[in-house]
Amino acid sequence: MADVVDDPREPDGGEPQKIESSCKAAYTSVYACFESSGYGSSGGAYGSSGSYDPGDYIDEFCGEIEEYAGAYGPGCVGAFEEVFACLASLDCDAISAWQTEGETPAPEPCRAVFLDASERCPESFSQCGAREVGFGGGCEEAVSGCLDGNTYAFRCTVAGATQSCDCERNGEVLQTVIVAGDLECGTQELSDELTGACEFPAGVF
Image (cartoon, rainbow, N blue to C red):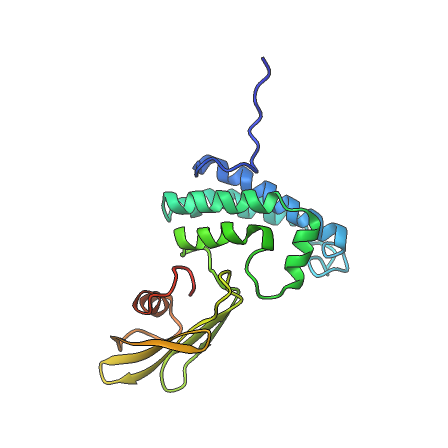
């Protein structure tokens, strides 16, 4: 009986040893579409010097991805594998449409998969494609291009040992929360604190 060949595009619930092959299948497919559209040629956006080899990047990145994903736990392992599986299944039309959409973090056919990944592994997957950080008299962050169709922001003013922060969705203030004032602007620590305090979806910031 012939051996059954494991298809790296099919997720199996987060097998760590399968991530590298899933990753390579995904990125090989994506870069093949770049090549066919001219982005990977010597005069394209991904190889202007004529010496860029996408295969080198794929081998390096995917060779390390199993350890990286595993460091964040089983949820992240499964999230990475399923994201790679979805990317590997796309045709070039879907990939090209994604590249022209700008700030959206995932191609349309994979948005539900990316949204799930951002909730299971917010350390590595963001729900939103564009992020702006402001300092001013306090701390401000705003994100757009989010997979759930919303925009989110928090805007804080410092008052003594605390920061008073407005939590916004689609430009509307949902609530005002108080957080410790020693958190630094622009840090992931503050973003994580406000994501929880504002009751924003995981992976937004």
